[in-house]
Image (cartoon, rainbow, N blue to C red; front, side, top):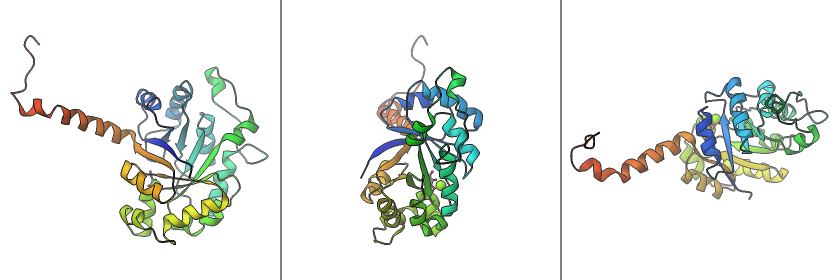
Length: 253
Ligand code: 3PY
Ligand code: MG
């Protein structure tokens, strides 16, 4: 199982992202589906991250060739395409991710606007990763055909939507280790085609359980969660002060 650890980001603050970019994760994912990353923010964040050579993915808002192209134009090493419901959707996402003759991506990289070099189209086709999310009953039904779609490089599980749409809970989904359980079917489909399999975990215990299912490419946490964990750690470490003498500014303050 190939493993790597990423952080999912749902803010569009370049300073925070630059701090996270140097923090030890293998990649960042910018969320343009449920976060405030619009096309202008994508441009700004892509330029900031280009300077750090950090690998970043963009979770685009939908199966939208225009957004897939814009994310890659901004320097994303790949896209995570949500709400896929069929192999036809997966094919549309894959075609949008690569330049002709392999796909239908349109030419228009942003780096030359920033004084950088345009990528070579053949190299871009080789390096790009098109991740198709499996988070709907339709995608689960067609998971083998999706995994076999040329240009689909990986299946990316969205446990929250998958659980919601199957009428179960994330806990039950993660606990299900039957051979025909949803996660087992997804992992098997990816393995048969020799493609990658990843997932949104969001927290380390979910990441551990997803790895037990054979899913190694994981968004283990989020920008919001690490800020919350940092605040909690600082307040806990400073708890003695809170329960001690009455708070107030230091003398002379
Ligand atoms: C899901 O779990 O449905 C996701 O899309 C993760 O962000
Ligand atoms: Mg989802």
